[in-house]
Amino acid sequence: MSRDNAERHLTEANHSTDAADSPQVVNLTALAGDGIGPELVKSALTVMESACAIKGVELVLNEERGGAALYQETGAALLPGALDRLRRADGVLKGPVGLPEVRKPDGTEAGLLGGLLRIGLDTFANVRPIRLLPGVAAATRAEPGSIDYVIIRENTEGLYLSRGAGVRNYHAAVDQMLITRAGTERIARFAFEKATHRTGAPRDGVRRVTCVDKSNVLRSFALFREVFDEVAAEYPHIEADHIYADAAAHALVVEPDRFDVLVMENFLGDILSDLGAGTVGGLGMCPSGNIGIDAAYFEPIHGTAPTIAGRNLANPISQILSGAMLLQHCGQEGSARLITTAVERAFADGSIRVLPSGGPANGTEAVTEAVVERLTA
Ligand code: IPM
Ligand code: MN
Image (cartoon, rainbow, N blue to C red; front, side, top):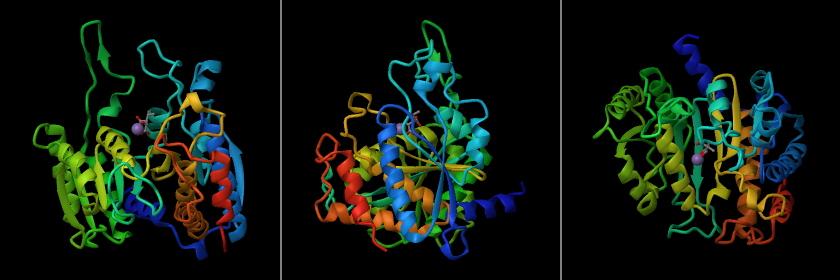
C-alpha cells in the first residue's frame, strides 16, 4: 500500500464516526478469554446490545476462542484460521487472557495473545485513553476533567518484539529493543491524527502530542525522537512536546492536566498506561483499542484476576468502555456515546462505586444494570 493510501486508511479507521454514512449492522467477534474475561465480556455485550437497539443498529455476534485455557486443551493459544476470522470482523471485543500457572518451558506465560494478535493482525497502534470521571475515587488528588489524555503505545516493535525470542542460558539473558523508522513514523502520524480530532489538554486547551522516550540514554530512543520530530513538522497546528520516560512517570502523577496525546515505545506504553490507570480509579476503569489498517480489537488493559473469577466481583467498566471504543471505531458514534454517557452518569449519581480493592461495591452485574438503565435515547 502506498504511504498516501495507508495514511488515508489510517485516518478513516481512526475517525470513521459519521453515523449517517455508516452501515447499520456491526459484525462483532467476541473472544471471552480467561479468568474474569467471560463475565466482563458478557457484561459489555449486554450494554452494547442495549445501546445498539436504541440506535437501531444490529449487532451480529460471532465467537472465537483464545487464551490460556485453550492452550492447555490444544497446545495453541488460538485456533487455526483465527487471524483471518478476526480480520473479517468489523471489530473484535477481547477479554483478558492468561493464567499464571499456564507457562512455557522458558518461564513466560503461554496463554497470552498480545504477541500473536498485535503482530499477527499488525494492529500497530495501542490506544489507551486515561480519563478521570466525576464521582470516581482516585488514589491521587485531581479534579475530574483534569485528567483526560490518551496514550498511543507502539504495539508491534520496541522491547516486546523480543517476546519469546530473547536469548538466555543459565547465567544470562538478553531481550533486544527494535525501533524502526517506518514503525515510528506510522505511530507518530497516528498520534498526531488523534490529536487533530481531540480538543487539547485540560490545562490550556492546546492540542499537544508528547513524545516519551529515553533518548538521552539509548540510541534506539534517539531514533524514535528524531522520527517523531520529522512527523511533527507535518502538523504545525499541533504542539510537539518531549519528556523523558522517568520524568513522565512523575508528571503523570503531579501534573496530568498538561497531557493531551502521548506517544511512546511498546514497553514504556505498557508501564505508563498502568500508572495512568492508577490515577483514574484503577485498571478496571481503562479500556483500550489495538488498531491496524485492516483489523482492530478492543480490550481492558488489565489481566484475568483468576482469584476472583466467576464471583461477580470484577469491575466491568474497562470492558464496557472498550465496547464503546469498538462501536466508535465501526462508525457507530451514537451508540458509543450512549454508553460513555451512561457510565459517566452512573458514577456521578453514585450508583457505581469502586472499592479501594478495585472491585465495584455492588458487584459486576449491578454495574451492568446501572449502565443499561442509564442508556437513554
Ligand atoms: C497489556 C498486557 C500485555 C502486554 C500482557 C498481558 C501480554 O500487559 O496489554 O498491557 O504485555 O502487552
Ligand atoms: Mn500491561
